[in-house]
Image (tube, rainbow, N blue to C red; front, side):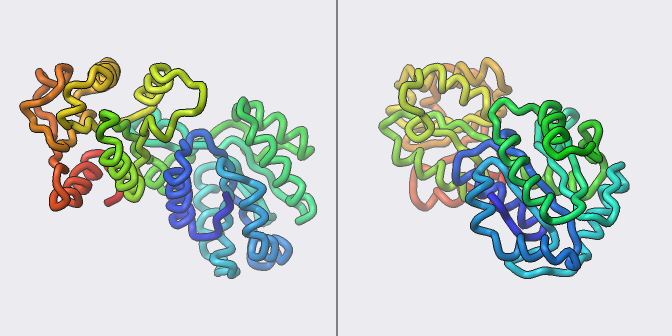
Length: 319
């Protein structure tokens, strides 16, 4: 995916793309390309080749340049601000066109994600950059590509040393703050009975509209996968479990399995019961002894919008 916009708008586009395609940002690689409005070849390339770059880079390689926005070359103020921001964090870029590569990972000292910049190269001319962009995309899209191996392979392919010699999260930088704020997408597992599929699908779609990734077994399973193994993996990946409580689900052994599996690794406060025709008195066995659960009644159309707001606020999504 290629996006030309301000940093905040670009990150929002990435979040929306990941939600729409069911992608995890931690499996993507991100490239920041810095150049001035006087670097004519670069400006023209990013201004006119939107569709081609998007098609080539795909869903797991995201490119940003702060110099081009909506097919227009804009003021160099954003570029200068970001360059200063990176220099304060210890990455010196100079005045030549430069690109930096990073991935996001779970933050070590707080909730959410943080960027880890692992490689960066200055570009002496545009001909070099076009070839290096192709190489970066191909190398970074390998499933087994770890940052340290990517750095080695990129240096070999490009023929020069990276200006980043060790991964850095750019502590204290405005860029890192924006990444942490925008790319920390809450992930939810929707636990439900198949009888409630239409309700669960609507819930998933509403959460996606509010930048929350939700997992449903009816759309997330690949042919040939073992259901129990795939569900267990999805439960481990999820930050929250939304338990759709209906007469059918409270009687379901499979729903009990999913609830018990989630409780084995997460705090009870990460479970949000969503009422769809059942009441708090009807809680399935794994939840009966838990206290202080936040119940969200979405059993009627009039309660739906307020309920979505409560769920999103509980999970920290945009609403």
